[in-house]
Picture 1 (cartoon, helix red, strand yellow):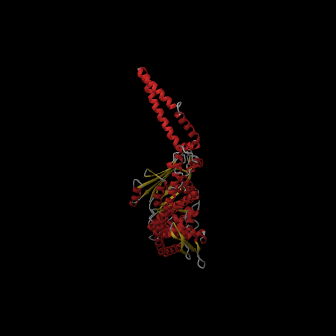
Picture 2 (tube, helix red, strand yellow):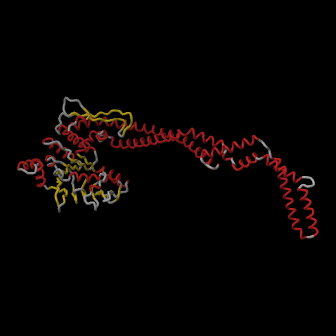
Length: 549
């Protein structure tokens, strides 16, 4: 139950505080007095978007605070969201001068999502401008499902439906990714084949280039090596014989004088080294083979590598290996992608089977509750002056699952006998709309666990006996819940357990709105004013007394 409202620095409200009670709470006031401002402030408690323009004094923050008396049934919600449970729970919303807003539950900061979820369990505000909800399929489903066992079933269904939508979105993304990959797949497979054929892991480019250089210059190298060998081995004047002669003579000198021993040793070592070099030159000369086929093969390999360098804009074999491994990984990724797609499709199929079962249960429950709804609402409408009104609810199977099952709903209406039933949005007039909406709200209130309902001028467009009947319906509704009604009808105001008036006055040269509770005398005066206008007549007072009795 909404026990207290506190508003500060909001539009025309400087400071406003009012306590509310159980039963039928009636708020009246002239047009423009500020009733819509109070409702606008309360909508902030419901988590609606804050507007910086609502701040009266731009230098100070705006505060809207609502105190609710909550039952133990809400303990689980508070625990799940790490909130302190208090039987007297205060929800506060602040709009800062910067335009930012903050929300609190029992002084604990909360997100707007948590605020909306909690306040949605505590209070519902219905404005006269929201009667078009009746034409909305989602609202029509809520009306019918409120009368049967679908309350918990629809939660399970919508959870599975949300999961199905997520799976379908994921599948679309995977398929799109696969499609994009397939467009380049053939070309990348060609690149991968090229890189794999190059045997990059076994390749030593420097070694290849050295071998190529050897083959390209084999003739000249062979000729030079042959001349070196011939020069060393030439009879009488050969280098090897000359060096041998030098070695012998230096050895004799060393024998004659130790002064030459070191030189003799060094020359001896060098002579051995020269002979070893000569031996290796001879071996290398024998290995040299001028083979055009080997030359062509080496040229082919190096040209292929240079071509790959140019194609992939790199300068080393190591970089080519990285590119090869990357493309190979991408191809493996495509295989994994196909696996993911297959698994997601299986999950979707399974989820659809679950939804099919749930949707059939939902539909069966709705078919049971539709006759109950039509009987209840037609009886209510008779009391509200629509004696001949007929309502029919039609369910039709849909091709795909929607938020409420695998079917669509349509409410048909006709106010007078002898006319065909038509969709309610085309068949209902302005005067009928408020009465039908009140009847719907009463039926929904009987089956809802909502502690507080606010009806904002839902009785617009009616008067006389019908207004009195609407007042009776509201009084009846208030027996099981706190019903707050904003009205201009004396017949409704007279039935209030507590009455309040919204007034606009000028204080210190500034126009301000406020709400004041009315005692029995003030209530009488207010009802009489609703009946007669600005000037209260004796007849109006007598009629007001009669209405209050």
